[in-house]
Image (cartoon, rainbow over all chains, first blue to last red; front, side):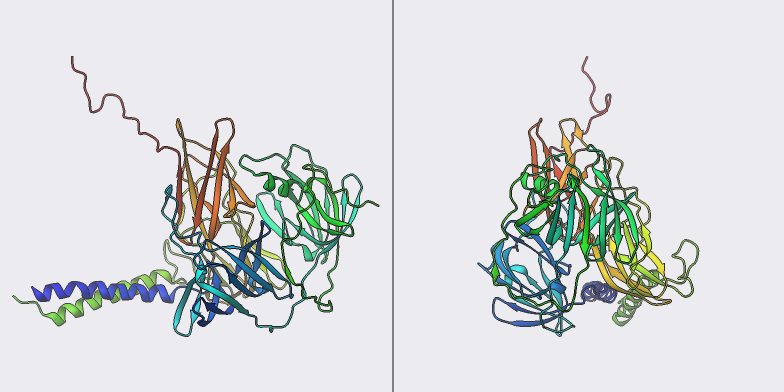
Length: 313
Length: 229
């Protein structure tokens, strides 16, 4: 009897060990980043294959605006605020020298909603590997993250996009710091395929006239390499069910944002005729380390669909 | 008759080892055979996307040197398409055979944020497994007359930005998003419906969100009960 009882745990243990070995051997690591993580107790951890929530970008909010910054642009992140709080203040130091203070959600992934079935249970945190094995820290247990970059620790010039934006009513704006929906990615669609273009590789974008009732608008994208792509851009003006006022304004009237000589600039995709980009100069720009920046002032409120009447030539 | 303990231990070790090697054998490629995964063509390597159980995913591969698109696969319809639903299909991870080189893999999701995986090196004759940090969720909406097809919006967790839009289905339908926390909102002003739910997208663990009362199963007439005369 005693021998029969001792037989069962051996089979289960060996099977479990075999399964664990298989799982460990077949799991490829995706992140190539290294970082030093300082937890709330002051312990420093050298972490390889560093990732946040399985991703290599950091999401936070500055002045109510969502920011998703890839790790290669971040120097360090400092978490200030109450440990364990669902939202914490963060100070993100970018490699360009600029710093941003914002809000970061740490405790969103603890308890699934009562209407949720399955999934969930994955706590948001920083993961990777150390010399002692797999590493994980919940986001609320971290004081500071210092990212290590293979190309050194010096300042990296921040890429700034400059362009001339021509609107449908003939106005022309010289825009500095142009962003498309908060980033440098221009999303378009070719049939059913969704693609995007890195705006730093684009020379110009010409928009064709589309029907007002169409959600899409044809556009021709010309790259600096000479390649041309014709696609369709989301330029819908119909308000979607569930869309907040801010979300609707951002989608319809502030698809393109930036700065002109007289102030902030924003325009919707429906109102643009052409965008001509200035080829970026890299490597020789002087980097100015900005002080802690609060949220950038919101663009002037204007009716949806209207172009920004800041400057005309 | 007493059992021999060392014999039992040896037997369980052999069985466990056989199971382990059997699983390893199933995971390897290149052996071909009827119904199996085809061999890697000569001179090429194989890119396998680990998507946590998602067998159909829209993705494309760019040559990192030339920035040219070398492969694309778009089996899924858009999230707001009224005809989108899961059709079953294979359980294999998405894979493609490529010439040796360095590539960028871009996976399209049902949000506006694609997942980019750069510096994927493909070598001739070898498999390259790439884990894609995406997950899926399902919205099951029930109205007064049962399951309904309703539009919804996908927000970031702070509800500052609309990341995507979708249309629920009366069939099984999953929506794919990068790993993270989101909120979905269903609003119908005429009927007064305004539902907001948090959604946790995890790798390999789909989450189902049920909104509204569970549909009541209709009992077919003439079964179970008889009238008393």
